[in-house]
Image 1 (cartoon, rainbow, N blue to C red):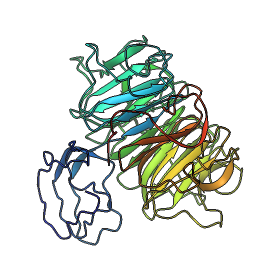
Image 2 (spheres, rainbow, N blue to C red; image 1 turned 45 degrees about the vertical axis):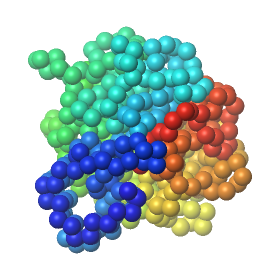
Image 3 (cartoon, rainbow, N blue to C red; image 1 turned 180 degrees about the vertical axis):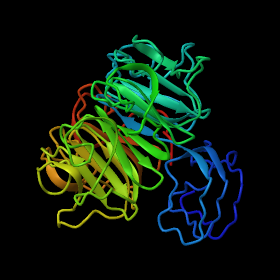
Image 4 (spheres, rainbow, N blue to C red; image 1 turned 60 degrees about the horizontal axis):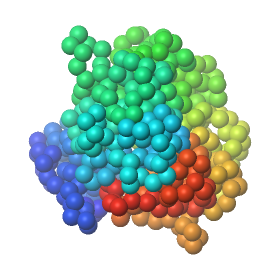
Length: 465
């Protein structure tokens, strides 16, 4: 539901995990509840409400009136579209995953290493050749992909040279293999609520608010105070050696990662040559450091984070966007090409802060945001047309993504940026991508780059939000 109203409703301890809604194709959408687009929740009591299993992008709390109580709310967020280095994946309403593009390491998960320019025939399958099922979130890295299922288990496939599949081997896998945690019983990693893949590493967030990572660790990107690669998950720790806790979101970049805590603060760790850790230094860190503003005070009131390659961005409660790190192509969006080791505010062409932003995604040297009206804006490098404004001219401020007729792309519900391409999901269930297409990562049955969105070819809708 995109306009539900629960003003002053009392949903204390309500179990909405089995409540179902359906899209216009008659397919179940998962539990409804508090993840509605534009939901009105003023004064609503949601204490103890169980949203587990809901296929929802996020809990929208912006503008809640005093009295709204979200204490104890649990839910399982999802990511319906993911752009990797040269491949992309999308989640359909049935909980299945389809991928397209580069497949040199089996990152499409269809038991081959053959590239596919369209997603239709490339369904991610398990070891028995059956579709990987009950998936709620996906994430794509350089040459590997991971998926989270409704039971809180994680499956990864593709390149595994650094152990980034987390199955205690370094053998590539063209089909998903369970990611196992180090415990005395050798059981699959469980109770996971979010996943994020980097260049050659992966991270997850569990139900207790702790983070585990595995794979490449040359710059401390696993956050466990070592530079030793790990083929199985290790826990991210703070400067005192204690588990990093109270985390609500994670994002993994090329060689660094960031986490958002319950207080709206951001912590980052790993590679920091361009100041992408945001702590006013360029020193790498094997443990999380807090992102700070130019005054030295912690960046606060953050609701979403995204890490790319040598840069990171954050969205705050009021809607403005902040970025930090490398800025050679204007990817910080502040109308300069000067890098910054502390957050700078993204501004429009008039020098005003971006407003009404609901989602953000960062790629190689470009970033994109989604606003409350369903429109998309991108900035930074544009060599392949990855800004989607029908040019290949880089931009130091956000430009609006337009369709082939020059009209603003609209009705968008999710965004994801890859290395040199970008993808979005529209409300009708279609995926559109633009930018580099040398490996077929735009999914339109060609290998031709496109400076405007092209529709991914497929026989079914992807997940609606």
